[in-house]
Length: 267
Image (cartoon, one colour):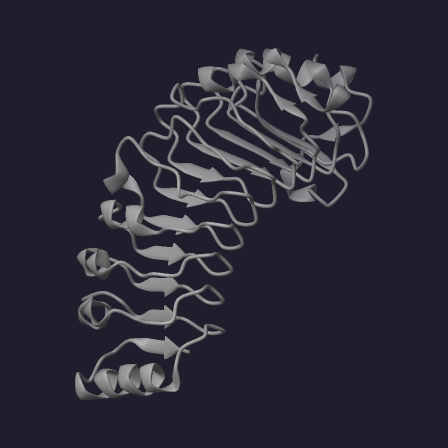
């Protein structure tokens, strides 16, 4: 029994989960672990967790990997569809990450990551969340629907093989300078680019007909293209803490009133 080899207790009652309680869920025959949540604050992630070959979801929080390295044995988990590692330092992520062909959701939050291997092998990945790291580059994104890169070091918005797949993008708190690529994300509904170095909103942004939420607070923009006001789905336009001339603020408010726009403007 692999769980009995762990240096801490793993409960099998998922309802008893807590901030420092590790729990697991077995399959219908009670013979294989299909989900495990490791919550041993300050503890080492047991290498034997990568021997749970039927694991579908792995959730690790507030722990450490040996030498801060996610080992190659991660590739043993070929049935994994959800991987979440939070507040756990990772100095190096194994190149084998890209072999998890069933992975749909990947979250690596507060892991001190400065780089990741190419993700092109993750053809089923649709949710990617990498906030609070030191990443500046991502390669191999294919058909992501939700991408969160909050608080990293990106100067450019990453490209996707299938850009029209993206529905949600969060790049708040990154030194991004150019947002023109977002016009290729034609099914985008939510776009967050506050606390960036963007200075120009491309007029073509009106082509994002499904966009309902746009956050460009505390950037370097000083003008709003009037094409934004004609966007059919836009409900919230957040542009607070920008150096708009007063005449620009008055003009945009007047246009919204004249058009009887349903857009909520935060300026």
